[in-house]
Picture 1 (cartoon, rainbow, N blue to C red):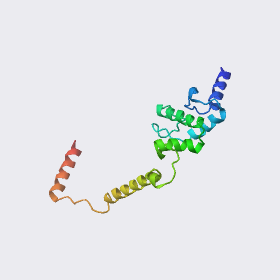
Picture 2 (cartoon, helix red, strand yellow):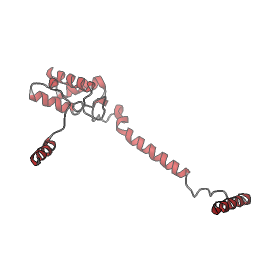
Picture 3 (tube, rainbow, N blue to C red):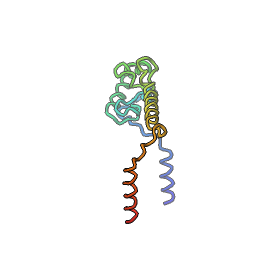
Length: 156
């Protein structure tokens, strides 16, 4: 029992990340396959968006893996293969898009959203500042009604 537990823990500790590249998609030449994996790790799955095409199980990621390997087999360099996919799907397919005027929103969008949220929070905090206006005072009639209600509740 103890050996089985140790073997199970060792298996989990030594297990690498599971890649979604199917055996039928892999190239026979290990050097070409290594190139495809390196390029694929830099391309975004357009369905999952936060995974590379090598990590994604989405059908579109599988199609991109096949296209990439076809380009490599056709003799494309790494840059040519990447450029081919970027030409078809745009800079968004890159996990690290270039900093250019076309991708400015991709790079600065999160900061703009964060700054917009900070401005909104500051505006709301300024509107709710308790020191701006004191609450209105009770009229004598309201004061009498409040005292009667408090007396009635304390009698219960």
